Length: 230
Image 1 (cartoon, helix red, strand yellow):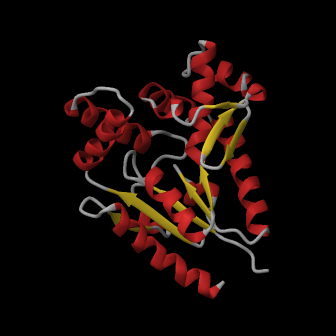
Image 2 (image 1 turned 45 degrees about the vertical axis):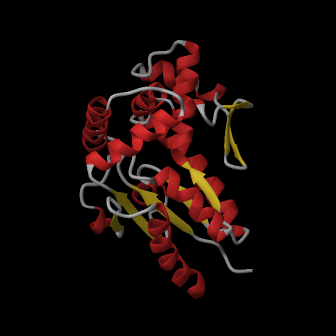
């Protein structure tokens, strides 16, 4: 049995990473590793406990109480299905706070690498999606995709997601949030969003004018070449 490999999908908020990655996993019979879910689940745990996500010491202290499991495209926090809950905006914003805590990132990266190594030993293709997947978590990933789109297109996608959950929002406010997240992700001291993805071996894919199917097909073509070589 040949050893599996990692496909790392990175990029700014609302670029389509969370939509495209599970589709890739399905097409490749691989495992979708949603790294961002770990930070969102920790942020949700803080919200549930009334913990200030900017209080690093308190956040780190609840790490021993944090348990996450991903099964059949569902995310469980300490046994509770939180798949839909972690998609909400309060969790998204809070996750940006916990994700910049050094101890938190070290813990999460260790978990992610352990999961992927076990799956690769079993011959699986791991589609890892989230911040710094190819720079910090899986620097040796066989395929690195930096998925991006214009802020306006990403804001429209985020607005559609919000509306599909039965919530309401104004495009102007969503666009403002997207740009704010970009600034936070680019400027943070720990594992920021890369400003020069090509230098880290990423294939940059601007899918502003591409459909989901076209985006998936593009990445599949790259992955199939690797699979044949493997």
